[in-house]
Image (cartoon, rainbow, N blue to C red; front, top):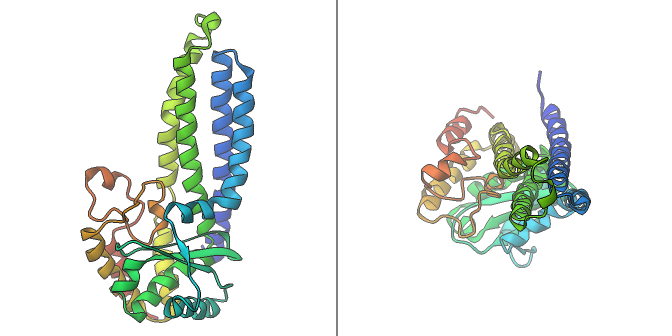
Length: 296
């Protein structure tokens, strides 16, 4: 039977698998284009770049995400209610106190990031602090602490960096084609050139598919774990209802498909047909119902 520890171990395995696939994909693209354009330095660049970005995504992806949203660290003096709530819940959960950040944005939302529980952070928007009462805020914070405890955060944060890098690298390789570095090989490598270009076009799509393949069950699990932590699932249920209403009117200013899966709720508000294709969360109505069906 699957347990919380099974989920934690699976997340660790998925993270290393993702980083391995990224390494192979970029080196593969580099080899294709170095062969087509008879330029060994392209392969060398791809190898070095993929290794460096794997290391960067592991050690610095959380800092990259926090900087993208201009998150500011808070202390017990600047935000005593928020800081004390996180501290008390972390003690209850048996987790080290994560760093706490606030994002200046009227749209209510939150996310957790970091590579492990010893190097974790929780970020909330000013909009979230404005509309939620104490029990509702504790429900959201417990949800994010559950992501830390369930070891969701490394996988989720690494995806942000790697998906973006695959897209940039693919664009770089395609531009090489327009520079035309393979005149001498154009007949012998025509098929390989087509394969290289098609691969570069499909690589970003594959990266997004991997991002969307991150199981939506992690949100249900974090909801349930958070409810067990506070012993009050109604707090998180009410918070999600308020977030649904408010974010529909005020989407997150810096919303990005690359980071959408990090947040507790869809940062695009109501969205449209295009945004629906990139949904990384289960419907909030289903999550609210599941919370109210819990017996804790």
